[in-house]
Amino acid sequence: MKVLKAIIYGNAYIALAAALITLGWADRFKVASWQIFVCVFFATLCIYNLQRLLRINQIKEGISERHSWILKNKHGLFWLTIISGVLAVKLYFYYYFSLTSLLLLSLAGVIGILYALRWKASYPTFREIPFLKIYFIAFTWTIVNLIWPIAISDYSISANLDLVIIHFMIIVAITIPFDIRDLPYDHQKQRTLPQLLGIKKAQHLSFLLLFIGINYLFFSFPWSFFDYKLFGFLLLAVYLIYAATPKKSELFYSLGVDGLLFYYALLLYLR
Image (cartoon, rainbow, N blue to C red):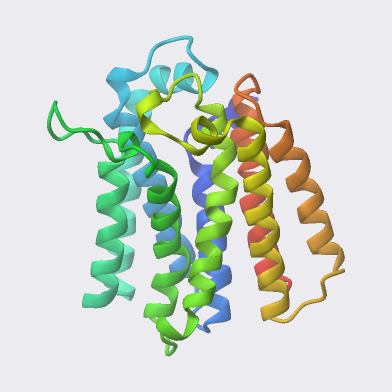
């Protein structure tokens, strides 16, 4: 259990999901490689742990299992952030450097840092800006997972704008349960979807977006609506989305709901 918690709370789990999804899209645009996988893995690992470190003074022992783990392992997270950041940068500049991709990934990185960094006492972090918290997350993932692979391929972003929008929609859908988890901690001024709609309506919206997005991909690639993989994904999504409450354990979200990202990556590979 200690190893499992280290993988999940140390953000290796979510970094692996991000890397697999990016590799899946890169494969579709014929630029898949181990370098893309490793680069995205270390970059995600760096940014997610950096966000935890930037907010370390706001974390209190006992609020949640995840917060307690972060406080106990903050020195290890510091070195993990440094090492993963250096590896991501070295890999990127060695294999993929170009002005376009640099601008794209820099934008994603800046949003990721400002999501947790309060650069002025009177200014909110990006996660605290009303209405926009979930969209900053989805936009960052969309840049890394899909827009960047298209940018380094022979395809154009404008010709695949429908896929960009659909991917953004899917990430929003998978992120909504985390806003449900954060209801006790998010300030009312943040105006997240569960705050605006209530838990039940937010759950309905989450599943609707996911249902539309996944089915769009199946018809676009093309796949059959009745494919067992699609049915399995939606069945799992129904359970995880509608079981989400603020009282659910950290592992339910960080292992279970984030597991939808792995299933999503699987769908990309098995199309």
